[in-house]
Image 1 (cartoon, each protein chain N blue to C red):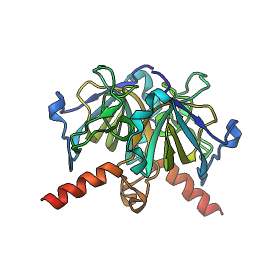
Image 2 (cartoon, rainbow over the protein chains, first blue to last red; image 1 turned 135 degrees about the vertical axis):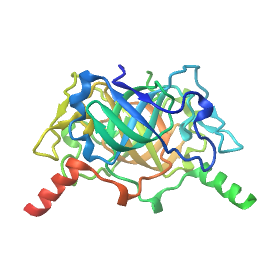
Image 3 (cartoon, each protein chain N blue to C red; image 1 turned 135 degrees about the horizontal axis):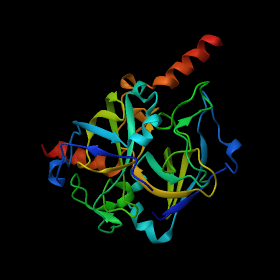
Image 4 (cartoon, helix red, strand yellow; image 1 turned 45 degrees about the vertical axis):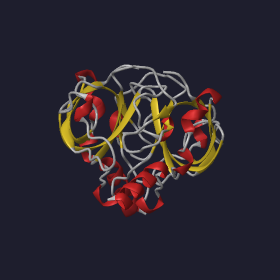
Length: 148
Length: 148
């Protein structure tokens, strides 16, 4: 695995990233692709949304149970977005605002400034919201709703 | 990067995987997680859809321009799902049908039997279909529509 670029994000420390129930990821920034890979961005400007696959920068081992800030209970790491996973791979959907050569201006960053990017893929279809169930997260949101 | 499991798919060779415009990925099969990681699946059964991050098994270098079967033109590799990418990472959204211990029964496989799985993440939100633009793929579909 080689970085194909890196993230320029307003989030410089972990506490800068919105977390917990109802957190919105609206931060704007850039995906700066290494110039040697710029040709690989050809026609990407027609895509409204992209998958960014990236590497967690702080490797600190993993835990099979995670405690997401959005839940009072622990859940299996593969049912969460915890960074402490067997392979330190992150996945974020961003909105593509503009492309300037090897630089993608994007919205929706939840990763730290300087994060290594491993791959970029087009977001081509959505699961219809009516068909989506989110298990423990739906339950945590329902509990919050009934408590507020 | 270490495999956390592997795919059991009806697709045994590349030509088994539906490709091109309008291809539907409805194949059913299994994600078999290594028993040592089974605890990481706790509560995943509440999720209707999952991201599967996997490794392309045949490493054959990469090409910055790709020729998708759904288009008569070439496009930048990062605007396509071509397997010949700088990092051989695949991403597939599957529907979770059932969980039996360390085995996930899923629908929507487009990877080959035996593919190594690197990570599993919950699919938590969709881009609203109205907001989604797919650039060259929308154009290729429009051309096909006007030709038929």
